Image (cartoon, rainbow, N blue to C red; front, side):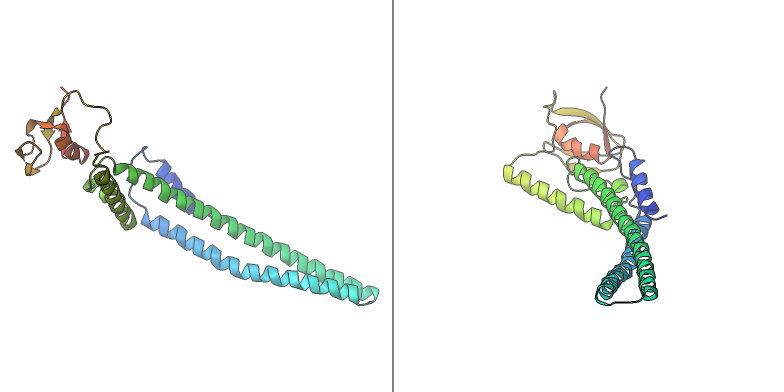
Length: 224
């Protein structure tokens, strides 16, 4: 059935948790593109045949108007016109099927790419410039480039405003939070200290310093 694979692509995205990405399905995406190409190749000869049939019908109509023919000749001419009209309708329906399938495939591909891009764009507000490896490996090469360019644009805009737009919109009660280090981050320079972020270490850090590590899954906030 035409456009079935494109429908599977959209269903795959829709079945994911809201705001979560599954791995980009390169194989299925490529299959849909190939099907689009096949529909386009089928459409071209059909459109030529439709034009030929329409020209033949016009020619038969002119011949019937201009010539004084016998009853038998008239019947033969009408039979030819009916045969041409039947072939014309067949080609028109065939072209319509391929056209609608092509349009449906295109809409499904656009929905898949657009909705994934929406999630990727939202990530730009949660991480600085480096995606966690678990997320990055799910992206296509084009999506990785899109995230990189979107992040650069966002950073440039914030630099011009001299305002960090990705921090909490609600002022925190305390600038420091209690965190547990999950990965071996090592020694880093924070805004107010040099800290050795070793695995399982529990410490108080400024929220702005800890936020990027929490987002990347390298650190967790302890609320109790």
